Image 1 (cartoon, rainbow, N blue to C red):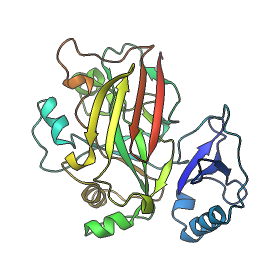
Image 2 (image 1 turned 90 degrees about the horizontal axis):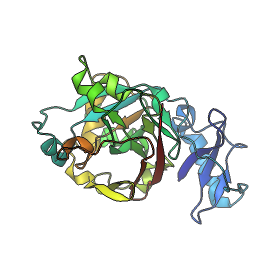
Image 3 (image 1 turned 30 degrees about the horizontal axis):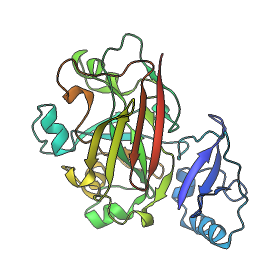
Image 4 (image 1 turned 90 degrees about the vertical axis):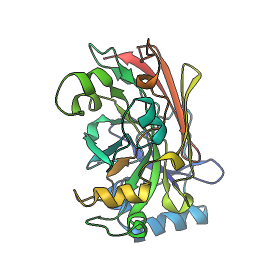
Length: 285
């Protein structure tokens, strides 16, 4: 299934995109697409049954905003330097273990919402990423198979970053990762049964129509299953939590000088095979 949330920010309604590309209203069946739904197998079965029976009312998608596909996110866990190509382009050693940091849930916005360039920023950067959405409470997972069984689905994420704040201003990466609007997510949550191999997905990102990133999840240093298993050793993962699994080569930081960092007025578009496409116009905060 392709699950999504549509409507004004803060007042989104749950919806489903059917196999014919028609938007269907789920609000009579479920309150929201969130951890409560994703952790309830019987509720998800009811949604599947209604979708299969063709009884869900259609929604007019004209002018309808698409919000983040998951509401009430508990935490956003991110994995840094997780592609061989990206680590090489920025001159970093291949990590021996996953690099883990957090983004505040309030950085998450819809896939086509405006991204704000922070005041004083000169190094705002782009990062297309595969996001994992957790569907079962995960603690101390032992095997890759067990880890994947705790995944509800996958989504497209844009891990926007401010490199000066992240690297040059002291402390951890938090200052460069948690600026408002810095995590567009969606358009859909694609359930795990429709993504048989998360290591077989292409990722692309364009800036002002120019292809900048053209990667593949097979280049991940730590595959999705290993990431979920690893993170579960250090924190409990709950239904509705998000893990951004890293970005492939092609970010601005990895380019020759002068590095083409983002400015107000730029347009970023990104996609992952089967997970949809995003488009954001950048404006000044």
